[in-house]
Image (tube, rainbow, N blue to C red; front, side):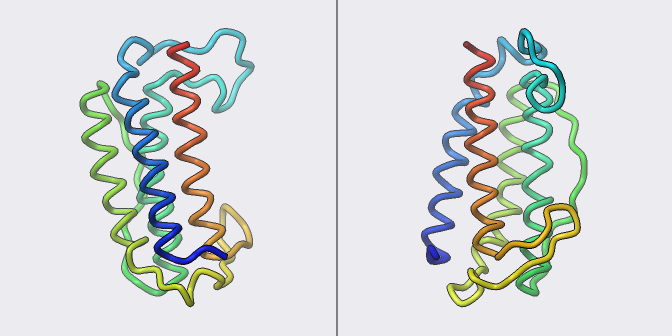
Length: 145
């Protein structure tokens, strides 16, 4: 399993990729993808941005509970523009990273049973964060097409 520092670096890199894509999403802020049937695949850039901004506290709260530290309170976030989205996403990602910075190497393999995401390890949960950011960065890039 990766070390806590390796996982932190992976999340930071994925966030940089995501925030770069988000900053370029103005032209597709309300544009729905052509031919998408439904669910997340049918989201416009604003919906993706609101989801990711909300996900920092969501993931942070789950990780915090698993490692026994105080964490952020999840909340749904509404965003009016790309500029607001970039600023708010940086803020909420900071809340997540305050928790991630407290993960120790000996906690990475610790098991978690998350009420919404099921059984995993702290490291697996952190890996989901990296995947999630990269996945939605690609979604924004595809929307800009």
